[in-house]
Image 1 (cartoon, rainbow, N blue to C red):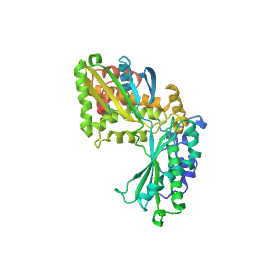
Image 2: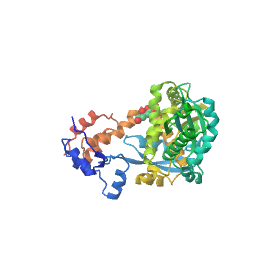
Image 3: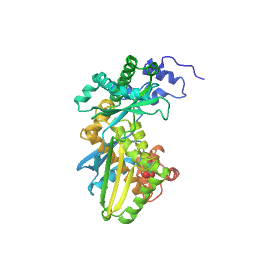
Image 4: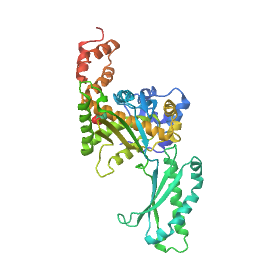
Length: 438
Ligand code: MEV
């Protein structure tokens, strides 16, 4: 049993590391020091993103070229630790770049937040005072909203909703926002908290409401990560015969049919749908991370959207009609290109520069295209060679590095495993048969 630590968060970084040193049976200080950034100023900025920080956890930062999206070519930065993802995105991007590229459409830009509160008075009284409450809430939040309004965004509407049939006395004010180029979480939450406080004081100060109405209670005020009205669609299409032939000699029409069936399966089977959508998020999350956006928010909203009709389904669709192969993705993406980590994390800034400093809407289009590319590459592999073929080839380097193979062994192994199945045991055996000095 360890002792309870008091005031830990106030300790300096080196105090925290020293304390940890006494708890672990290895030299933690030395182990993590190689991950420290030599630029102290930069290290301080990164340490400040979280709390009790003692090291940097490094994840590869890659780029996927040849993304033709709405007629513009992008090189997309991707932060991901899984092998094959960037290779798959790049391969799908190149493939579609000669078939018209990705076409995208913004289907909505609205985000919402909610004030959940308890009201024990008459429902009619609440609805009667609401127009005045709304006016007061908007007026008193002006100091928060005026900047956003100058940028063309702000509060779009508010709505009073009755949840009392499900939970006694519970109501909600749903506020809809346009947060322009920012993801807007802080803005939305600040407005909601200001609204909640106005709502409470309005009711308490109201001259004619009965006592039970004054007994209202704010439960909570928070944005929603479910953003079905902040939505983007990305699509690829081409004549079926234009799909070409595939690695194992599979013809276009066979591929198209198997591909569509694979997508259809992800619409009826939750086990497959989850893996299918995970593949989409391999690409989406990698861009979200590279650009300093919140991947947990995007994942939560995306998975909720996948279950919008009551069953969890594929986020992508495929049709084969009039000899055309059409494959598209519809996904809510509440993301930003200003504010938050996008402006603070030096690599997020670099990512946005690589992308040509897109607006939030342009970044939604790019991100959705990468998700679709990732999904296309995964299904193409699944219905042709199988996923392990490419995946283990990519993973070969990880295995070789972990077994401390030297350059000569790596080159020999790459040649050997071109036509041989890669597995950890097979690579270890190969290295035993080809020792370092031969
Ligand atoms: C692996 O990270 C992602 C895939 O499983 C996605 C899929 O099955 O569609 C390959």
